Length: 160
Figure 1: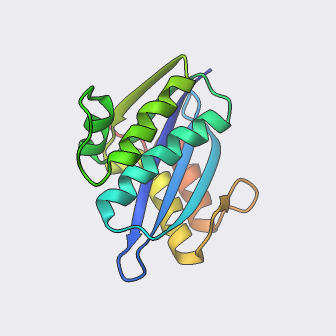
Figure 2: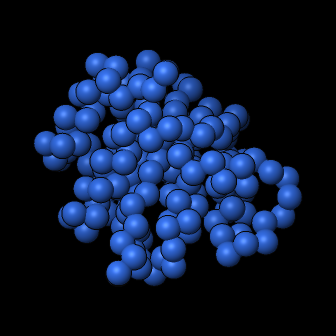
Figure 3: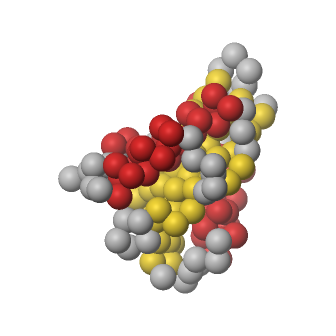
């Protein structure tokens, strides 16, 4: 099955924490899995986006999907993962880990996505920030997440 894995991160600079929201969708756009991660000791927003990408790839692996398209809104992170060059910045470990994890799939493509396209992932990351949560949300969606999922299914969250 081909799936899209959308991810987004929010960053709490004061507490040096980030929250990752991930949504896995099938080819018709139906949300299959949703998860939020709470990450401590994150030095900067850029690092939180790199970590979010790694977590999205890992969630795809853990979910046993073989063909994935990973979408995030940080173009620089996407380009670094697609590049064959060795990473030299502070996010090197995240980029190396992402490159290593993609070998678990038959196909793994990375794509830049505009924020509107991954609205559900963004709302889930914000929910993590509000609830200080690290969990699957499938059985207990908050009203804002449930509304965003429904809007997404109806086509309101798809970018052109």
